[in-house]
Image (cartoon, rainbow, N blue to C red; front, side, top):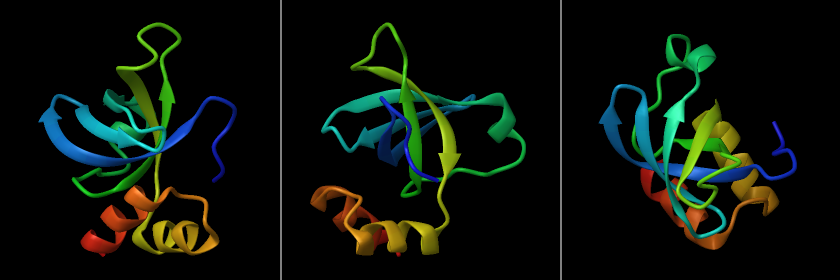
Amino acid sequence: MEPGPGDVYGVVTKMYGYDRVLVECSDGKQRLCRIRGQLKRRIWIKEGDLVLVSPWDFQRDSRGDIWWRFTKNQAIELARRGALPDFLKAKIEAVA
């Protein structure tokens, strides 16, 4: 799954509950993100997971929606291909 225009990779750093999480994004910003309804009941997200974030049109620098979670193998493959910045690679390798 490749990011679309405007989408960014991110690593979940803190779970707040009620489908809200804090994500450190590949553009260097931390965003309070919500888990989309389609993912909420099908895919479990936890701290350290690599996710795909779509920033909101308003509050673009501080809010966003999570619309995909990568498995550990997918995250390692993205890091190997060079699709992730170095600070996200370090977080992925620390958890894996």
